[in-house]
Amino acid sequence: MADEPLVLGIETSCDETGVGIVRGTTLLADAVASSVNDHARFGGVVPEIASRAHLEAMVPTIQRALDTAGVKASDLDGIAVTAGPGLAGALLVGVSAAKAYAWALDKPLYGVNHLASHICVDQLEHGRLPEPTMALLVSGGHSSLLLSGDITSDVRPLGATIDDAAGEAFDKVARVLGLGFPGGPVVDRMAREGDGRAIAFPRGLNNAGDPAYDFSFSGLKTAVARWVEAKRRAGEPVPVADVAASFQEAVTDVLTRKAVRACKDNDVDHLMIGGGVAANSRLREMAQQRCDKAGIVLRVPRPGLCTDNGAMVAALGAEMVWRDRTPSSFDLSADSSLPVTETHVPHTDFHAHAHEALK
Ligand code: KG4
Ligand code: ZN
Image (tube, rainbow, N blue to C red; front, top):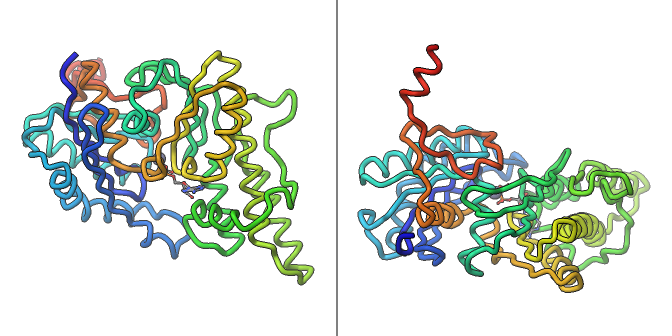
């Protein structure tokens, strides 16, 4: 294996233009330009606005990351980029930029999986991930339990949400409560002033016979909306902090219960939690309590590394170089629904493909 490689990572799967630089498992720079404010008045991310914002932010963000890290582009050992999953147009901006830099600098290109990157980022904070590690990934687009071995090649899905993602539920509940977008951080803040036991909101897929590792948050979201609506109709004040806290309690209860169960069933004693919702303070607290009780080591990156960023892509890219994985080819394309099992998009022989297609 080579020395600790110096890799630049580009992330544009949603509304954050992230550019990170790492050396092995050491973070050197994490530059992020967010278009979140441009989407706020629409109550959600507008793909076309995100793509345009990526285009404008890309070159300055790359420059900022290089300046912060104090390295020259020519010193890099590779360029990594999120190839998917995510918004197609947004991903395309990152993939095109990565290709352009890799081509111009004559560096290997690694198209990597956004979800595997959310797991790998923890290496920047807590050192190399043990194999196996259970990963609970909770973001605006995903809620999954994944069993990972070698993070560059072995990520197995155990369960996922059957409807809304956890972050989506936070965003929708925030909208019902009139708290703005994105909902997670503000619900988290409000909940600190409320009582999580005030209202018994339902826990999805939590009965005997339900799929053990799948999640459902749509029933919970509807229950919160109905409860708030009933109060308003009755002309009573809505106890916003209690609703936020009770909703948050229901989400974190199910997430942590299922994650600990997945660890126990599979004999895994390390749990990592990643994705934007892993920034949630109650989730972190409850996960720590339940892991301590079950003898599981919990690894959660600091909040800034949980939400989308370029460092996570650079972290996985560096691991790809370190483990000598085959780079992607220059016909790499963005894949909005890249399966989680495809940790990266390895080199494809373009001519062989074309030949196959013509047969
Ligand atoms: O990973 P991420 O930045 O983007 C996606 O890949 O989706 O996650 C964004 C999601 C949003 O739904 C946001 O509301 C949620 O993460 N989020 C939180 C918190 N911070 C961000 N949810 C709960 N508590 C938080 N503190
Ligand atoms: Zn994400």
